Length: 235
Image 1 (tube, rainbow, N blue to C red):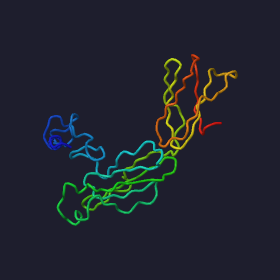
Image 2: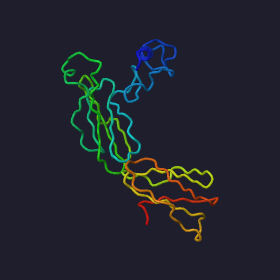
Image 3: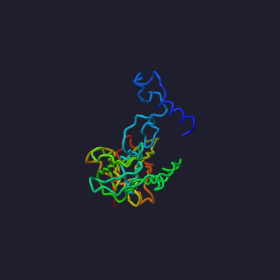
Image 4: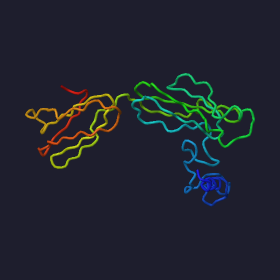
């Protein structure tokens, strides 16, 4: 953060200002216009009034291959943490600062620069929850009943769906997410009745990486055409 913005944050959290919610009591609520809202570690506010205990970075909502996640841990005065996955056993203590800081050496600007995150991989399909508790600089642990948690879903196979369709004249462009190594067939029919069965428009071979793929139908002469995407590739 630029030094000017940092000074503004310090002023917002310490000065007497009529924009505070409790100006007479000098409560340290950040004013609504403060540039310090959501700019602290893991998106918490900067200033005096922030939630105690550990904070955890936002987890992915939906993870495909690789089935993993990296979560950063921080928090006001938090120097160490423990974590657990899906209600399992708590991990060993993970220090966010060098041992020299625990031993009483002076604080340094980069004391958190090598803070190890939680790194997960090889997760099974389905929802997963990580819980974290923090240990502050005085050595006190956050209660496990007050653990902060993050939940997300892992799916090692992409949903099979067409994301977008556009048409210009007799050319139709179909975009979908192709998973690396998977093959596909695009089918079409010009009416939803027995007289118009699904017919193959083309195949998509396995792609080297997962990502968007555009299939082009250059013979979409009927005014209406329906498309279907199937995997694996059909004969």
